[in-house]
Each structure stands twice: as C-alpha cells, then as structure tokens.
Image 1 (cartoon, rainbow over the protein chains, first blue to last red):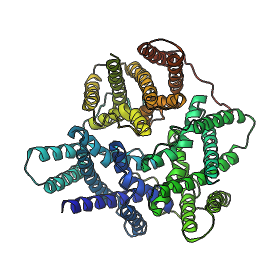
Image 2: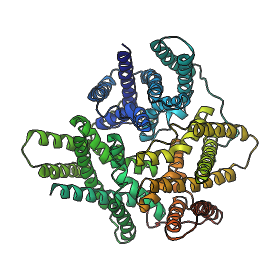
Image 3: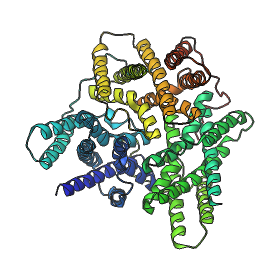
Image 4: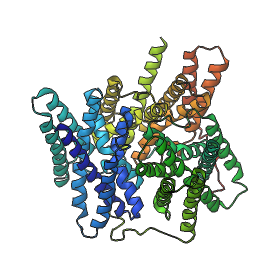
Length: 210
Length: 210
Length: 210
C-alpha cells in the first residue's frame, strides 16, 4: 500500500514537471526534440542530483516506465498546447504539485539512506528545486526559484514540518506525506495569489557586480 | 581490433571537442588558462555526466593520455588560431564529428551497462550534447543546441538508427558504428547548409517569461 | 596534528565561501532562504563535484558540523551586512582564501585516491573554482572566473607548485600546504591590485557568436 502511494506520487510529480518543462520550452520556441530534452531534464534533474549525492543508482536509468511517462506527457503537452491558452495558471499548478511531491520524496530518500534529518531538508529542497533550476539555466531564463515569491522557502518549510510531524506525532506516514505535500502547494498558491514575499536585502545595489 | 577502433574514435572525438571548446573560448577572449578549462570541460563534460549516471569510474580520472590530448590540442588551437581565419567552418566540422562520435560511444556504454536501448538513446544524446551545453553556459552563450538547426535531433536520430541496425541487421558492429557517426555528421552538415529546421511552436510569445 | 590542520583548513574555506556566496546573493536581493541556498552551493559545490568525480562519499552528506557552519556563517553575514559597508574588499578576501584552501584540499584528496598528480591539479582547480562558477551561474552573473584577473590560473599555478614542493623537497607537508595556500592568495591579491592579466586573444571579435 505504502509502496503504491509512493509510486503514484513519483509518477504524478514526473508528469507535473514534464508538463512544466514542455510548456516553458515551447514558450522559448524550441523544436520538438528540444522540448523533449527540457521536459526530461526538468523531470529528472532534481532526483538525479539527489541520487548522485546519496550514491544510490540514478532512479530513471533502469526505469523505462518513468522515461515513457515523460515522453508521453511531453508529446501530449505539445499537442495539447494548441487547445489550452491559459498557460500561466496551468504551468503554475503543475509546477507547485511537482515541487511538493518531489520535496517530500527527497526527504524520504535521505532518511532511508540514514542521512541526518536536517541534511534531509536540504536534499528535499534539491530534489524539488534543481529540475526547475536546470530547466531555467538551459532556457537562459533567470531561475524561477530566485524570481518568484516563496519557492525554495516552501520546500524548506514543508520538509521541516514533515520531519517534525514524523518524529513527534503518531500520525500515519501516508497522512503526514499528503499533508505536507498539500502544505507546500498551499504555501506556493497563497504566496503567488497574495504576493507573499520573504523580506529582502534592500541596502544593496542590484547592479553592483564584483 | 574493435578495441582499437573504439579507442581511435574516443581520441578523435576528444580532439574535435577540445578544438571546438578552445576556439569558442578564444572568441570570448579568455586568457590561456581559461581557454584550457573550457577545452577540457567541452571534451569531457558529456562523458562525465554519462559515467556519473551509469555509476562507472569517470573515464578521464585515470586516463592521463586523454588529458594530455586535450591539453596539446588546446595549446595547438591557441597557436593555430593566428594562421587559420576560417573559424566558422572549422569549428562546425570539429563540432559535428565530436557530436557523432560521442553520441555513439554513449549509446554503446549504456548497452554495455545493461541499460534499456531506449534509455541508451538518451545517454548517447547526453554524451554528445552536454559538453557543448556546459561550454555555452560557462561562456554565457545561449546553448548552441537550442539555437542551431537540428543538433540534439541528429543525436537522437543517429542513436535510434544505430540501435535498429544493431538489432535487426547482420552488419558488422564497426560498419554500423562508422555509418551512424557519418549519418549524424551528414544530418548536421545538410541541416546547416540548407537551413533545415524542426517545426517550432509559433503560437507562443517568446518574451513571455513566467 | 595533521588531521586537525586539515580540518581547520576545511572549516575556514567553508566559512570563506559561505560568506562570499551570502554577500553575492544579498547583492542580487534574494530573500533569506535564497541567500542560504547560494551560500550552501558556493561552499560545497566544488567539493561535491570533486567527490562525485572521485566516486567517494560526498563530504557534506554525513557532516552536520559542516552544514551548521555554512548555516551560521550565512545568518551571520545577513546580520553583519548592515554594519559592514566595504563589501568589495571583504568579499574579495574571503573569496581568495577559500580559493587557496579548497584548491590544495582538492589536490590532496586526488593524491589520496591515487590519481595521477597532473590530473590532481585539475581536481584542485575544480574544487577551488566550481563553487563560485555555480554561484555565478545561479545568480545569472558572468562567472567571476572568466571576468577577473588571474583566477583559475592562480589555482593551476598553486596546485603545480604544491606538487613540485611535495615531490622534490623535504619540507614538511603542513608547511608546503600553508605556503601554497598563501601563494594562491598572494597571486590573487597582487593580480587584482596591480591589474595583472594573462595575455588574451585579441584577434577575435567578441560579439561573433556562432
């Protein structure tokens, strides 16, 4: 049961990120193979860095299903795009769910590998954010993570609350999992809707490059 | 015999990419050590990512010959540049050969590690393209792969045909290898000469950043 | 004794790079969590790539102390920034020390893993420079390494002299270590103060992108 839920979560997150990558690549007018590559990198980027850091087999290298899901989702997005106009909202929703799902998977894989819980929060953040960061670097955009309201912060908060609930409460693992994923989605949604921002450092000159 | 051909191919691909990296770095007016670093990253970038994904020893870590080849090629390029004016064509030819050579090596190493053939096409594409992508990111250029006519597409097509010929024909391995490498070079050459392009998604506003 | 010195050097380098990352991120007006992520990536980026290449456990995955040092230094930098105005000099000094410290650590870890000394110079350069390169790519700046006077060159020269002294003299390991670190800092300092530059390739048109 637990296995199946984890599996469903991983597939859902992959679909979310594959769509988000495909749409971002189409916006930049890449050709279909380029769109496919960006979809792939966005989907597997965070998990790949996580697996390399943990020195466990990279999850998609022996997982034809996962690669197939990315391929089909990307092709679907390329066809779907001519119907769907409301990209901003679509992209945002998929991105938020992928972010929440992957963050919690990252924390879990860290715990399974006996990594200290505090470092697992970092692993979760990497799993959630790095696919999108690599996507934005490849597409020559300023990484979303550093432009949007509360992005990585949502991962860090969600990961921390996952660990707190997991350590100090008797709630079932699955409930904690779903709760913290929805929490990350909620933080992202409210943050964008009400323009929440973390305080920034305005004493600095933005243009001053060293 | 087979070993020697593979070895010759790897050396040739390394020389090609080292030159392509050196010329690109000189165009950006880097100093000699900077040129050397870019030459190195361009040559080994794709194979390094491939080896990390496959969890096999990174090929150049114990291979002084390979590192020496990159060093000498890069120094040669720095001296050679004052004689040679026709950089666009030179850079293009070296880049195309490196692309073809490295793609097929990537597919082969994947097959050797028992990776599913379809995922091996991805590995070949990564091996062929990632050195150039990292080079362009470091030099702050829009990655060549996303600007030029048919680049990654050539890898994907070449890798797929390699697998088809390898599985369904009785042709010798070496012949298939050389044929698909030349095929990738040919696709690239014709694509650039006749401005072949994959269809793109023009319904999108290029400037709309989310 | 030797162990303690190595440990102190690693902590000092981490503090230096965490500060350099934090200040650079604050200049770009990132929020506190963003500053933390950049501080982290700058500190561990070079060493992480080195450990992945050597296929040894990534140094910070089981090292809570190291992660804590980065966290505390980054928070300290965020508070400290309102007092300290002279950021250019501060950033420069920290960056130079981190560069020297990490380069020599990289060379040493390569030697310990039985890598050929010449490849170890490359590993040292990667360890010293990649954290800063990743930082600059994430912050969308032209990588410092390719803009400033003599940066990677200082690593290559320092690493080479470390190896020469280590092989051909009877000086104690610790003295060679400290000497080469200070040498790298000195090269950087004089290079910036007196605008030393490596010769560049002026025959090229900087704008000509291929």
